Length: 339
Image (tube, rainbow, N blue to C red; front, side, top):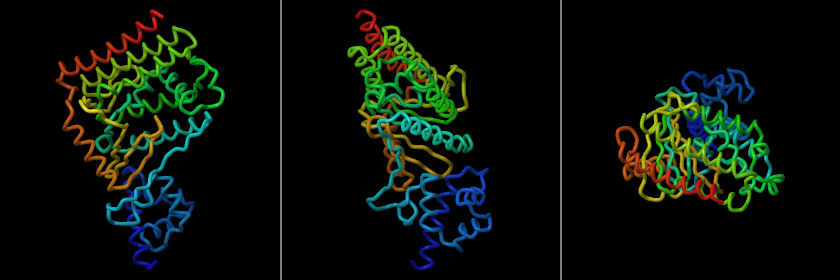
């Protein structure tokens, strides 16, 4: 490859790295630490005087979660987009890695100044972060994903009981929510957003997968606390921590009359965007490809325009929305209590 083209591609990559870093972190220091080279060598790579090796490019893309295709061309066009994802298998350790990577991603967003970080979440299901504010509900979700989705060994014959969920996983989940509660967020819910969680609880009850009736009712109780917290956040336009105290993140909630289709998250970190798209129930793929992110951003903003704002002063619409949700939960609770 001619030197000019190498410098052009390398310059684009360096711009991507710089965009991925908060302003208080030195690009030179970060690159030197990552590649195990001196600051002088890092400077030469930043200026394009020393070409990056393919191994260094691979390391940089993996560390900063930058799509390879996002910098090899100045154009955001084209039909090929690269995604990164956490490969999950039927082993509890891979699920731990999944949660640890989620925590890392949320903490990365949190490193940026308050006004330079945000998340838009189109929620086909209850946003995964929101479950993690409630330990019993978190335990149920973690157990359900391992037993019913991943078929993790050791879960197949167990009934739900918090003793089967590692406390370390619950601690990671709480860290994730604590970080998310500080990030400015817009969430878009539909009437179907709560359906999957209600059906998961009902399915476990009908199939005898709860250790006891009290376990099932405790999960329902915490799900009710989640709905109450979301409603309060919407009323105040601010995130609440796990103790229902105001946190730093602003919050806006929209109600979509149309089916959302899939969970989609757009994160904004300074000038850099990241698009997360769900697959296989709860796992996600990430890309920072500019073209894909811009299209996703346009789709989300179009969805917002077609949705109704139910946070802030929209008291009547908010009340009706959560009244329907509460009634669905009450029907489930009555079924469990009467069985």
